[in-house]
Amino acid sequence: MKQKGNVLIILIILIVLALGITLYYKSTTSKVPSNVPGQPSETRQPTSTKSAEETKIFKSKLMQFSVDLPNNYVAEERIGSAIITTPNGEIYIDRNGTNFDNINDYIEDLEEKNRFAVSTKQSYKINNLETVAGIIDKEKAYFIYSNNAVYTLTAKDKSLFNDLDQIAKSFRYTP
Image (cartoon, rainbow, N blue to C red):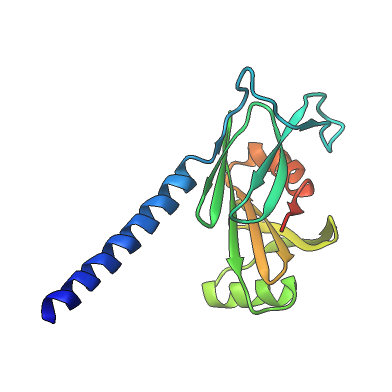
């Protein structure tokens, strides 16, 4: 009887490991290549008039959003986050669940618990989603509220702030 219990425990451990490996593999292989010849990619005109370059759409299936990226940017999806690699640095997108029903209460609680302040706050509606943008230390951040989750888009390098603005303005929640 004791051997049957041990076999059951070992089987459960193996199943959990297999699921973990599968999730890790899927999260690390969902990279969006910049320009793969022979592979169709969605393109659209950029949301800004500053650039005439075409963009591609990055869709995160795990985090349920999409954004427009310049063709030479590469996005890598991870569990709960995405990293956009640019010629000048990286832009990060994170998703956090919340019990708050609006973005302002979420940010107020975040500031209090983490002892920082979002300066130069500006409120927006991006594709009908509550959004607040601001500076935390020297990092620019967008907080976008959707369906009891907050998406945070950030860039540390000042040279990426305009790109971050364009990417944030193209944000779409895609359930």
